[in-house]
Length: 379
Image (cartoon, rainbow, N blue to C red; front, top):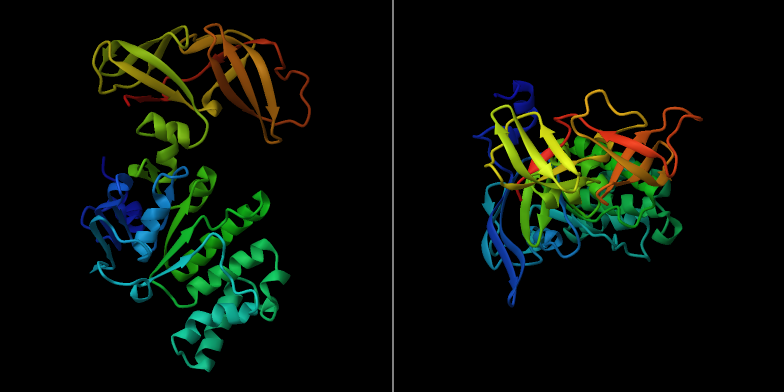
């Protein structure tokens, strides 16, 4: 099926002949016998806000440091804007890097911190002053220009570091866990600021994060990493709704996983016999598989419907006992133990302030879902 032209215009990765701005080709980084990055190939396009997502030790920061020039690939090739980066030191690359610690000079004012890189390059004072003033306006820190870092909040220091990284107008900005030190509310506000600034300047951003929610909120695309490899690259919605493996399904968001064996395989549906569920799972579309193949069925908690009465259509329906309820304000999370002993998570939106009919602890309930609500995984 062809993509709409509007998508192709705003999403260059949909165009087979689009030229990548950053090209990582078969890059490996070894430390003795340990592969920190293992044969990674990745194309990133101009103007993207691309997130490298993964747990601690997966190789995402090492890959970022190789882009910046702080680490040298053991094998492979890195190109930025068509130029091979081999042998080019960090200070000569069209990049800048914003570190998690922010690394501000404590004895300098906000204005001086932002201007530091320009002054080191020998820019005329008047031009540097105008450039810094423009950047402080963009990050909404003009009233704080004369303050020292210790006189600022965490979010303000984060914006100083961002302004300092952007004031030299790099073609590529690399951000290593940029929001990790902020509290939840400030992190959410700063995410919107990052998106606004990136869209205003048109600079290509590559962000490293272990926070799935942050990656989903910020990025044009996400590259999920595990054990030094890229295991899936896609837009946030595709990563969440159509993970390619159990690792991605489990790492990005919450998921229920049922193991099963293919017992019916038709062009327009398949059926899995699942001891985890205590019955069969009906999938309402064809899947590339063979009879008796072991597969996994992943379904998100919000796709599951809870009720006291048995559904009229009892396909993909199973009973269990409510063991825990976590009230999160906008939604409630239910942990339900099936008759097989497997625990399943389901969420329900709290649409009303008070509900006398709400399902509560120790109730026996029915769980059900549609035949296209989950995804079938072979690995």
